[in-house]
Length: 289
Image (cartoon, rainbow, N blue to C red; front, side, top):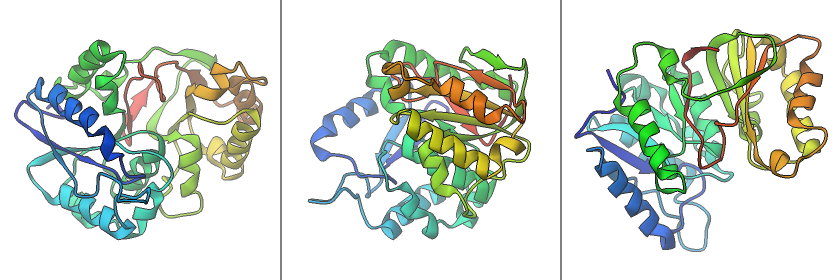
C-alpha cells in the first residue's frame, strides 16, 4: 500500500520555530501543488509564529496540536514545515500511546530530526526525512516526480525508498534500520530516552551549517556516545557549508578519521540534505545499500 492515496488529507504543523505569516502565500502554493496529486491539506493551530516571538505556541500547546493530528483518523500524514532550534521543547509533552494507536508518518528535515528520531524511539513508528517545501522550489518538476514515487506508489520492499545515488568511501555494503538526520539536531537527544538505540542501525548524517571545527565536534560526540562503534554503517548526506566553501579537512576526511578504529562502512550521497534537489530517506525503516 502506498503512503498516501488520492483524496487523502494531510496536515501542516510547526513543532520547531513558528512560520512567518508574511509568507503565507508560499504555503498556499504548496497546498495547490499537493492538490494536483489529489492530496488536501489542513493547518495546525500552532503553525504561524505568535507576534513578537519565534514560537507558534508554548511547548505544551505545540505538542497538544501534534497529538490532535495523530488522533485525527482523517489525517494520513503530518508534514512539519518548520525548522530552527526549538523542536526538542515539545518532547516532554508527547503521548506515545496516541501515536501507537494512530501510526502515521511524521515528515520533516533539519531541526525536525529531533522528532523523526524521538518519535521512532518512543513508538517504533517510522518517519521521513523529507522537505515538502521543495515541491515549490527551483527543482519543482523533479520533486513532483519524486513525491509521486515516494508517497503515492506501492513499495514492494523497503529498498524501493532508495531513490538516491551514492558512492562508497569505505566498504561496499551496509544494512540496518535507519536513524539520524541533521547531526547538530540529532545530538540534542544525547543522554535522553528519546535517542534511538544505535546498536545495529544504519546512521544517516547531514548538516546545513558548520565548518570543520563544528563538524569535528559533532563526530567526536557521536564517537564518545558509542554510536560509531555500534552502528552497522554510516550514510553521509550533504554538509552544505563545508561543501560550498570547500573546507579542509573535508567532512569525508573527518569521518574516516573518527571511524578508522571501527572500519565502519561509509557511503556518501549528494542527494540527501538541505538542497532543493534532495531526496527522501525513512527514519525507522530497514535499508540495504
